[in-house]
Image (tube, rainbow, N blue to C red; front, side, top):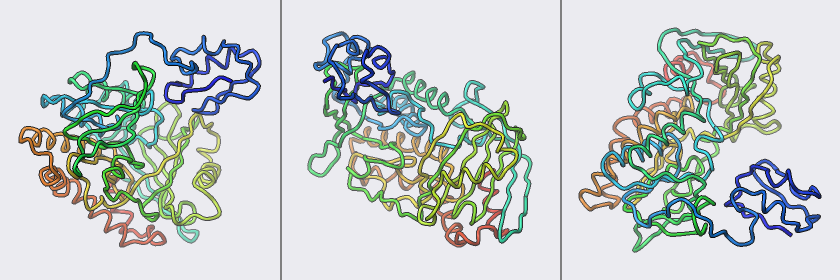
Length: 433
């Protein structure tokens, strides 16, 4: 029976289309071979990446990956790409790896950013902007009472993250970083207690797709809320349940909403411990989602609550979901340490998300820039110890980190059942603008 190499497989389903006995089918991002397979070999011929071949092909591939870099960045989200771009511009040799075959997909984000923070890194481009926002609406529901606040002014965007993230990855490559997709980190290279590199598993875009060890003077973990780099490094990245927001979101099409206004709903009964959002994306579309505090829901999960929210809103109920995503937002304090010898964490991996709003795109980009700058300084001094790399922690805690700590204390001051309090609402609105 045909065997599927999951590392090589790109889920194009070309093999499914040619199978004469319907023994192959695509289950989301997993190709399944049924026992009815007759080993005719048609699927092997139809596979563009050799994922169904029992032996790897000797066909030409892209240039071999190097075995030594100044910096390896794990994860090509906004934070990882900015880190790679910054390090490359500083003259360092950089490898940026992304485990998925396409940077920016799948999206796990509501996609909102502010103008002033964004332009510090990249000029806005209509290719990856879905809507421009200049007002905010927030509704609270408590014991049957409903109240709505409005705020105008300011300037923000709802992004098209699939394009935005890819553009940042392209900029990292243009700055001199080597970018590799479908390339997963599988562990760290640790010598004498210090991180000296990373083990990676390469996809079909390289010769001899197997696990290799790559030396690196600094590893930057930008691998998201599920960060394995942090765990391998022995850093405490365990996320408490009360600091995890379980999120579900539809992209709804065919709805009639103000394309310049983001909407939020805070209600303990409708969205325990979190909030629901409506982020317009132009042309009658919007990201409609919610985040629920992980330790609060019992009988109904985030998807069930999202469905209830949609059907209860006449503006939304007539829409059609053309996309569905889920994720976990870490609304926690950063761990006490986000560095050790030879490694730094940024973005969701370092819990650098706003505890009030769950927003993290710009924070990750700022962290990526800071971490790369410190990496360049450390390499210039030939000192990549945790003591030197802690300059990144210090700079973060003295700037963005201080604001996030304040917002965490504020969220903690108002337990989930009291977040319709006007004082909390005003603080939330300031953070969301």
